[in-house]
Length: 324
Image 1 (cartoon, rainbow, N blue to C red):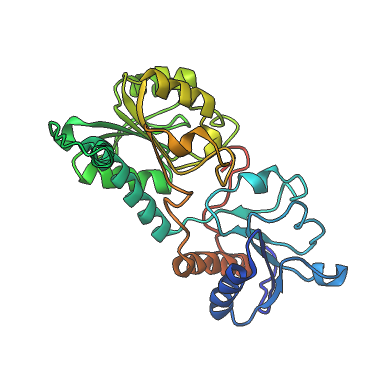
Image 2 (image 1 turned 135 degrees about the vertical axis):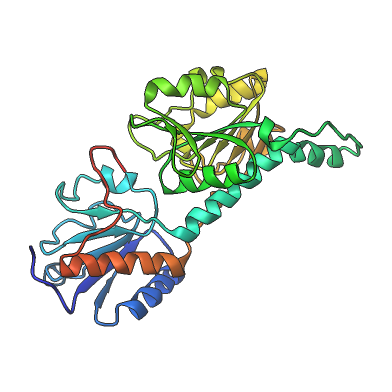
């Protein structure tokens, strides 16, 4: 076990503007007053040699190269695919992703809003208002709406339980084969690649909260969309690269998919002129479904930093084999 470090040097770096960086610095420094901080990148080899911990937000490629004392990379974002794709990060270096309870709750709120909107047809009422039409339609009960939540990590599970509490017929799916059935909280789940297709065939709304891995990149393609009942809805709150956008547009044009709620895109910000901007069957969010809460996330990051400095257990370590 490495010896405890009482006065650490911590690198804080990411792709952000100075104000955002300074907000994080203030929050973290208040919780780690004993630390010395290096902002953005080490200025000299001597400074690089003193860094014990890196706290990062999608850092620039190779910024973590040449840090011989580095014990932990703590991400401030939930997604770590860019870190894992950076071959300058040593393969044996522990990386922890951000699991922020406040962000989980915010994501569950967005998932609930999207499913409620689709279930009750509020998007259709909004369009009718713009067109000056008075057009009430029949109202179904929540327990008549079958919802699949893809991804049963912290965010997916929190969203699935929120939807279940609202009365929806919810089944969760985990990509890795595990035990299927009903868990102690009453959430129905199926697991493994073979279980996905029967689940899609009976699901009217799919909420995607999967991590982005080589196995899930491009998962939501023509085959996936064709497996859903005609007129089903897609809610993508995970990563834009999960969706093959041209094939989603084709499914929307044919009516196979009745509506899509999208928070993430292959290219962000979404380019001007992209078909999603004006598509009548697309509801867009600007990657705002759940933003990291600086206060609670700073607490999570600092708890992991202190664990790494004292030989304790770092939570939410990334499994490089799985990609999250």
